[in-house]
Amino acid sequence: MSRPLIGITAYFEAARWGDWVREAVLSPPSYAKAVERAGGAPVVLPPLNLHAIDAYVRGLQGLVLAGGIEVGGGAYGEEQDERVPEAQGHRDRFELALARSAVQADVPILAIDRGMHVLNVAQGGTLIPWLPEVLDNERHAEPGVPHVIQVSVSSKLGKAVGDKVEVVAPHTQSVRRLGTGLLAVAWAEDQIVEGIELQGHRFGVGVQWHPERSEDDRIFDALVEAAR
Image (cartoon, rainbow, N blue to C red; front, side, top):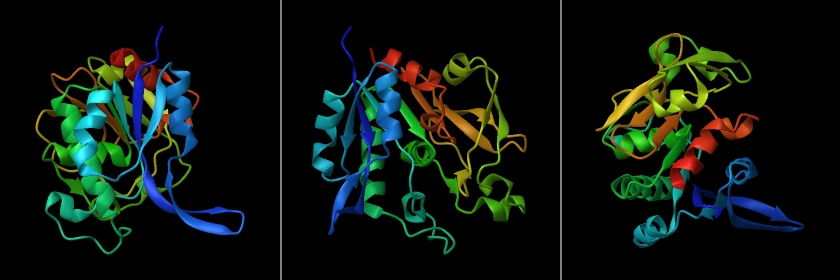
């Protein structure tokens, strides 16, 4: 059986080779390894040329919108919160356009962490720029602390992972207003949205946590199956 081509978004960062330090296109290998284990063929997409996006989408059978630095406030009509790391504007512009093109082409999408926020903003939604302020606590930002997520069993996400999943997912941003066509399908105990899904799409799923970092490949299995 042939392996569907799954694009994975990446970012520019300084990297070292011996004594050389150069800007590089980087992607944590956990994404590519998870796609490969699920039966897909991973390919890394550098955030370069907006004119190439439609060509990317025509050539891909699936897309992973990967995690990373928070989406800049300007992308959804807000001022940049000073507590949030400086936005990577080139990446925001590229990934928002890529997400819109993939949605229009009905290409299966798995949006992870930042990627979930990209998908929401691409569909016209907004974000909570600094979640600890809204909740008056930092429980969602605590690293290494697992919590249980409730999942809608009727959703594609629920069919992949069941009605509950325990995750470690530190984050300081969250979905505020859902974008057009998106439904909340997973929630933390305090009702913060932890998973979203695009109605009427072959597979348009976003999760707040990082399934590529675990040994549970069921979400990637579902993505690759949809890509076939």
